Image 1: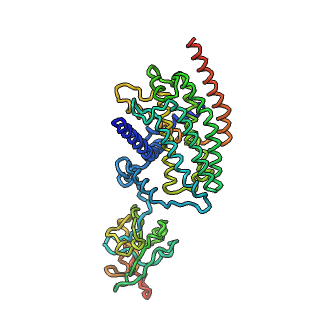
Image 2 (image 1 turned 90 degrees about the vertical axis):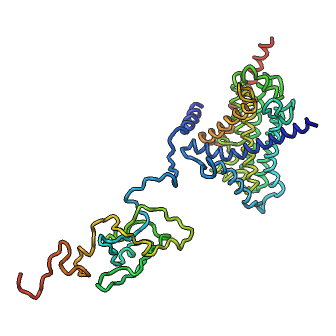
Image 3 (image 1 turned 30 degrees about the horizontal axis):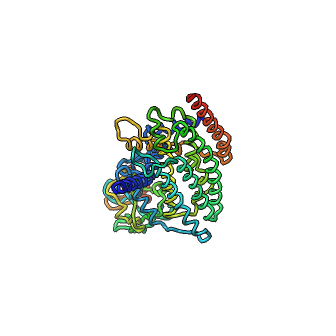
Length: 171
Length: 318
């Protein structure tokens, strides 16, 4: 009998406690910076697309929600002809971000992607591309890769030595 | 003629108030339960979620009103109406304030007890007519529970009747002018309140509908407005037991400053909130515990209360 009374009292006193609920649309919950939300494609510091269309993200994706087609511009720089992410399938596992060799594909803190039509959840390249470098401000793949493309010859990259002439005997 | 019109106005205003309270309890219960469970409850529809009642009503009205093919159709349809009728009939004898009551019945308390006993039929018939095992189990349980709790519910009130010397609820309220009956009849109050909770089969005594074991008990097969009738009937039952408790033990409309009807409503409201607090805090007992608690604890207690009150009155009158 005493324990019942005590139970009733304890439950009654809950009334004066602070609620655990966050009133979502008006009150925003804390989102950690490493949150895995909406996927974006970033650009390098020069403003070019980082994606080199290597397909590694599409391979890593466990639900096959990424599809792309690679192509090259006139200077031999690879880029995706189209890049499509079906967010109705995406499970936000972040494997694509881990697989990406050029830090192009990144997950952001945005999670508010509600749509009335399923088709609207299929994002094309223009929806995915952002104007900045995302989480990695200074990284530029073509500046560290040994590939010669427009504006950068062989051996011009950072931390890169001049190419050796194999036909010469000189050291 | 003017008397008849006055009677009609009182009747319809009581009906309106009671039904409004019954409907608003849907919202109140959800908000209060949330409050006691560290949540907010419905607060989106209208101010404080008050229009939730309207939304729920529209929803329940537009639901498919389905009668299962194996059910006993006429009984199945009558059962939910019975509980509404019976509970609303009980409200006729309750004195809300001096002059504001439907009938000034000199056996008002007996009428209330009779009507609450008739309420068993609703549950039993619903369980029987549904022709489903869960509904039948719920119906059986409720019959046993309500019949056995009915016994000492009546007995616990006899102390009050002895002190007031009348079955008329208005006279009982007026007899409390110099002290509420809660003090001399504390045990009677406890026993009556527990029996009242069991009578309206609210938690912790909701064994007839025990969600975790019997799906929804006697109203498993009900949907739409028929389910709504059970639902509102239950809330009306809560209001009724609270109002009767106030009238019998807490001085009814008596109170300083405020008008009598307001005092009555405030006291009733506190008891309704207590009903909901009980639901928020107490677990449901096992069925055999419920029965043995009723027969082995509550019945002797109410008999003892009866004997002691009788002896006390005898000593005083000598």
